[in-house]
Image (cartoon, rainbow, N blue to C red; front, side):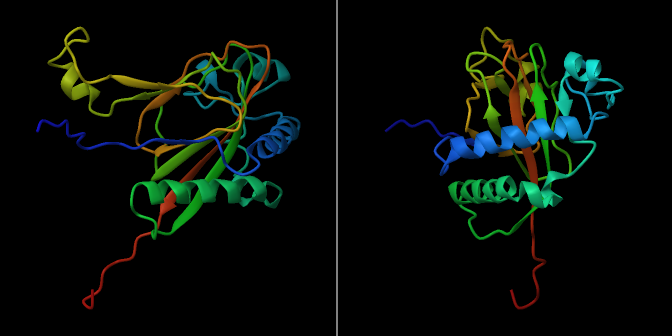
Length: 218
């Protein structure tokens, strides 16, 4: 019998049925908007993101978008514990899916981002983390797709141009309100520009998995 063996996968999971996910989304939306007021010198996204620029005026945020990444680690804020606990529960679900349910983890960092019309996040990875996630507290469907690059793209693209390649170069996800996406932190990803007059509001987080050094008794 013939079979296709899907070797060396890089699992990405989506969860859109987390308990009370719509209430969770609405609560985080309000908290994220509060962060915009709390940190007028916040980091910028879109074409200002790779340079690490900070806002010097409200106009900068309107032009480029908002991220709290450079200002505050939400993983250490008690008023965001509702979101951080949900995130850890979803990360734990990922570990069950991949068959490693007993590995402990530490929520290393979390932040909020607010996208206006035309805003996006360029290609990047999440260094110094094992798993990463995004949660969409607000998302207009049909725009701002999340795109993952095949980590082996550079190898096979050298030999197989797109018209004859049977291995996908990229995978696209359409975000929607209340959806979690969990992925290995090394996966290169970006978003298409958000083309809506409504804000897109995102919670992002990283975890480090905890390893135990083997002993002679092991």
